[in-house]
Length: 497
Image (cartoon, rainbow, N blue to C red):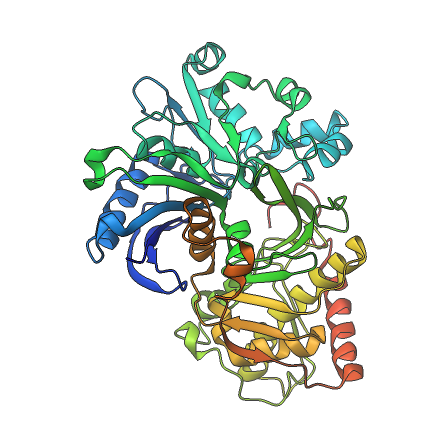
């Protein structure tokens, strides 16, 4: 019997990729292309949706050139979350650039929503906080600023989607307008309890229901690709936001299973199963994935400055010339702590008025101590979030699965295990989000039978076990918490620096 493959599309924030996986979860071929980052004003970030589609189509063809296309069982999509696209249903043309999750232009709208007392309802309905990060106020901005957009939206002439919806629409020749539960849960418009678009929030934000996609399982056949794209018609069989796809790709299928993605930012997510944990302590509650009409929930903490702290050492301080030079050459930091709150503090503190802090300097402190303190700051921030998750949910985290660039640094991973007091598990296949999308598509198309079979494909590259004395680990962490406290509230609201 000929083995089937799965094609995963990984539509990220700065580049898009296409990866073909075999039934063992191994990578057979890969295509990747960056696309343009558009900054019209300070704090604004946009993408051209047409460029994303063109780049995605190119890399799909590159990946498929290396394998027999007839052996592709289906396509799974994972995508940058929250980024909003609005397009014309008749022509398929976007009416405005996509507004990216990083964009802050609607911060004032969010302030007004909080002033209207909506925050408790938003938390209860969506599991999120009111923030420009999420899609809803981006949609509202497009409808308010593009001529005739609101009237066209109300008559059903326009469609909204996150990047998964945009790609599915184009792959199917405009026949299918859907999203999945995980991406819908990031819009600030989806009720994660009733699993429906929330009428009150649509009314409060003035967003017509007619523009919204149908919400479907994360793993099911939504439609088929137009035959002229690849010479055959392939099932489009899965979608999931990038962090939820990474959770699935790590085989975190059980309550308490957790992963951390160490990128420019970091994202820690824990599966809470059928239990929906009420948001709090700087954590949000979200949908992990939906299969067979049922959803698993997750609790999530986002850290703004993880790998970006090393980039800051390289690009601004210039004490290293490339990120690979950030290596540990000292036994300790000589009492130095670096709190990388260069854009404020994120989870679990969420203080936009905090600023970066280097503290504990003495006459003998040097470059090597600061490099080590920067690497340690990644692990300290993750412990902040893990402790908050444990407290909020009452669920034990017995191990942490990891992916992302910093996981290649053995020191950071060992220090992480020491701080948490639990094993840190680094997988052999590091393209975890794409792997999760492939798993979801493979379940929908019969490549794999169930999640138990997928769990067997998880292969460790290395397990980092705690080695540090617990009293010492806790003493070091107390020093970190003192440093964080001193970084808080450094500027007053309205100050520019």
